[in-house]
Image (cartoon, rainbow, N blue to C red; front, side):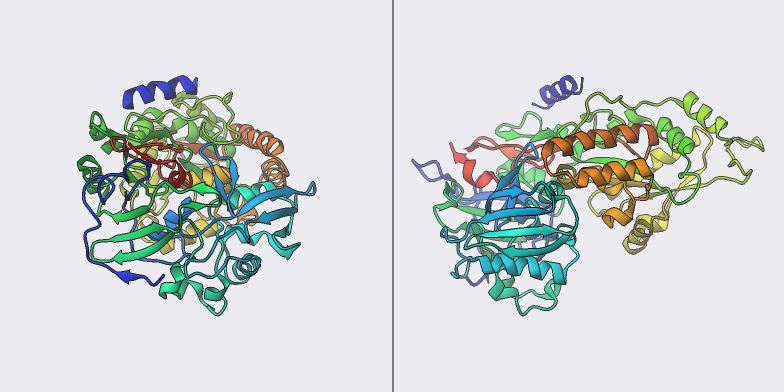
Length: 551
């Protein structure tokens, strides 16, 4: 069913670094036409709304950091393709031990890869990277590591504290990048290190210039090929725009070739303006990530199954679909996980509004209007007031507030007094404190496309003692299924347990998706071919540098 709906929507949409002040070029490709004859792209201009303000391979913030999710300047050990499958990068071959605690990995040392200052990439850099990250950071993809051992000239053994090798690689793919030992070994506070050498990587592109006034950074391919694959894009110009509106205008005028902004796809309200523009593809795909509400299990009434069921049934999914997806989204299923992701269960029912059933569930659980004011009291006779906390996000703030308004109004329709947590909505520190403590009642958040592909939305639902995130569900059945999935040593087991988690959610109402929306990452097709639009990620990805061709 979901496939036919998706097809219908597709038819509808059919060295040293110096500052520079020169214009990197005008028109598609920045420097003009692709090189004649060989099909290579002379310069590709990528538009984003992330700031061009931090140039360090250690950080994942800003335009530079987010671009490195695409195997760009910093080289990852693994990447992920458009289907969510892990692919080799610096790790050329690997094997997971049946215990699911050990990974034997052969790394691409001695294959011509150098750091961008000319020093060779070695296995010492690999061992240093793991040690440095394990001792100086709390990144999720190193928290589970016990040790990393040298096996031979090009191989290491990665040992986890507990079983979970398959999911660990999923989590690391695209995000875990190697660091140059000679740059970082004496840096005690990595997040404060901002010297030019902080941008040295060993990926296929190196940073060559920055114009901070114009919010532009420029990158060049390090060679004709990388790890045996020909690099067809010779130069990349990364340009920051003040808003998505100005970025769309640049794409329409041919001043930018494609949009990349990690999880911040183009707002659906802007999508109609992309229709019918010659040479511009709207870049629509079914998003891997999604908006959802997560119920807090540490206080009443959201710790009560009857209340969670009633609240889920009270939501107006058609209105939510239009609000989030601008008419392009799909009404989601109770399993939360969106269709493009590994382990999606297409047989679970779609969600729908049923106020009569919601009221019945509340009545049976003792939530009744005792004083006739149209609002229910709890089973103890005390007044009810439920707090709705939106995720703090600068780009999506307006959408979050609108969604909170809808949830508050929908709950009132079944006699539940609810209110926006205003302090949490406006103060990022207070917001983070509520999430980390698990003291929220209804949290309205978002699973990014990357996390959805890596470990799924359930990473945010299970009790924080397991993930260190903000989930509060400690139900034994749910915890058991999540733990067993994390311990899986192969894809088949992982997929089966992902399906079980979705079925458990259909009974426990741990969380509810609000929409399976479309992601829009527009790109120009009049001068280039070979784009692959990854679901929820867009046309700029780890494969772009080898597949794009000039027409």
